[in-house]
Length: 219
Image 1 (tube, rainbow, N blue to C red):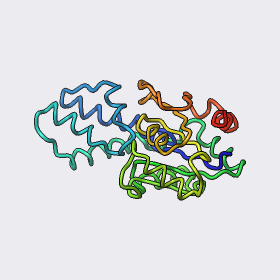
Image 2: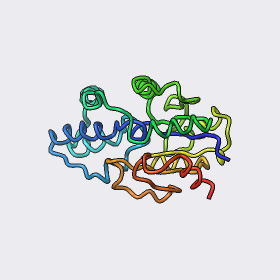
Image 3: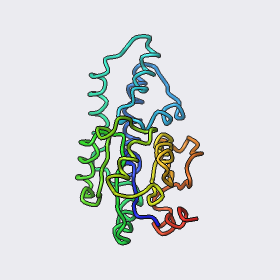
Image 4: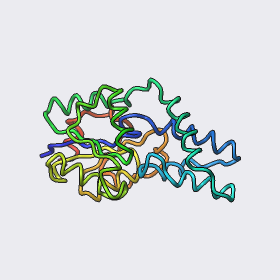
């Protein structure tokens, strides 16, 4: 019996990944670099500020960039693009259904706690979650299983008593390595990838009801 639902944050609860991609595209364009969608999507899920994004620029320019200055510049732009954005389609409905069934709800995110908690507060969703596990809480982020293992412990459930929702290949790998039934919900940035490890793939959280997701996990 499923007792808990664990959600990724970036690209699953809030579409931070489209603004992030746009902010990096502007930087890359200024340097004369074009990064393929598949290359970009493949680096997502392990960090809110993937080192590989800077590595691509270093390699193109043939010299190391000032990562701290570039991070600050890019983050300002991302936050501009994120302003007033609501939760992704189906998120609020799914959370309401989880609560109605009296299931536990958690977040497992490779991002920093301040980032995740801040946006959950802005969305008015912070009090819905019984556990929020972030990058600072574990030795390794996704695709390692640490975040999900920590979330299971915090929620007091076994792997077979939970389902996870993820938008990245790294995230799906992390959930599966933790032994959790995982539903992939690719977004506009990640849908160019294959999600071979996922137990189920849907185009949006709004595509099915919680009961349908639970039935899939029980099949």
